[in-house]
Image (tube, rainbow, N blue to C red; front, side):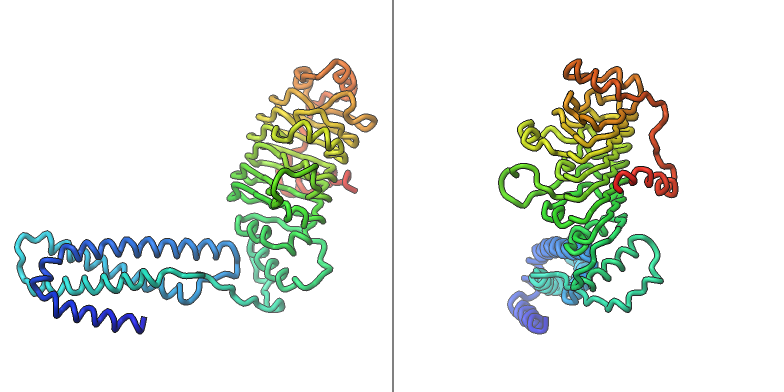
Length: 418
């Protein structure tokens, strides 16, 4: 800026000498329009810089805009106010039918011309290679945990603590509840946290899509319990594979996940549970848009090649799923399956069972008699094999009405994990 200002002064003086009042009057309207055009360009550049800054600051709690960017944004705001004032005066001068005071118009034209040069300069300086910088981490002992209020604030402090403990190798048991979009982003960005997590709950109404890289899934080798509930905007939960081409077989990603609870989420399928070889308990509740558990893109050949898919699954609980039409479109072996409960799933007309499913393990299939009578079967032998396991129940499956009830009742289902 120190070098540019003298240049602008020189240009303005040359304009004084060569243009003169008469030229100023002739070019006045063109200069007003030129100023308007460079102001549009400044508005556009400023908006781009602001969006970059806000996006990066939201991505990482410790990223803050650089001092150079902060000063540029303040300077841009100042020029916008001054330039708009000149444009208003210029428009008023153009609207006058009589030229009036030529000297007054000449001075205004000179001010507009100088503003055009200055705005062009600030536009050029608004192109930054980087707009944020990392703040220094405070020492662990200075974290005021006792003053923290609110789940997200506690997580922010925990995030800081974990970053300070990155060098330690023996952290292996962490439980987290993520309630904001920012906290979910932090978790996805932390390899250390993924390696340590054992119990994870996501309750984020802002979350629309949860895309988990397969590498992150593999890092979560200690994760045993996953609960995703009250994510009222979550429509898609998928796994992204970094490897090129079609995956061969079923990779063990959530290799130790044993308990999965999905509730109050508008997702359409849970196809990714095929990557949970140790899953023992599946509970899906109040997901009105859910149509399939294992989606149709999972081909028949893949199922035949992976007969051990969900081989450790012991319990399936499906509650309040009005759109559910299919658990899986092919029959599954499910050799460890003990209990099935289906409540208020009127569109589910077929189970992924044949005469070889859950041999010597199944205890009961619980549901309403009217639902059971409408089920479709591949053959009479399969229907006869499972009819003896059906338990007609008018009791509503446990659905917690308070957080305390949830904690108490959940213990009953977690016993199968012990």
